[in-house]
Image (tube, rainbow, N blue to C red; front, side, top):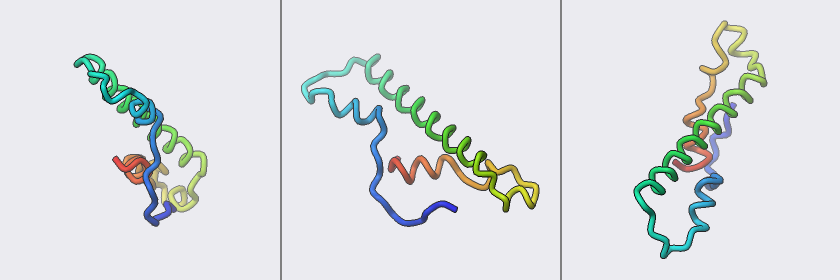
Length: 85
């Protein structure tokens, strides 16, 4: 079961890299779109890893009622709670 306590959001690697860029740097449209795409790819990878880990845990509760374990947890909620997005 997921921990319901509030915690500070963690930082993704893409966000960390973005913060390293000097403030005076002006992004082109292509660079900004590439940054947004990288954030989306990273989010999908984090959600996929969450789902794989959850499946590996073999939640007995879900298996006993014949429910797919992927339905017992929500990767989108995990991402939003962990990374504050």
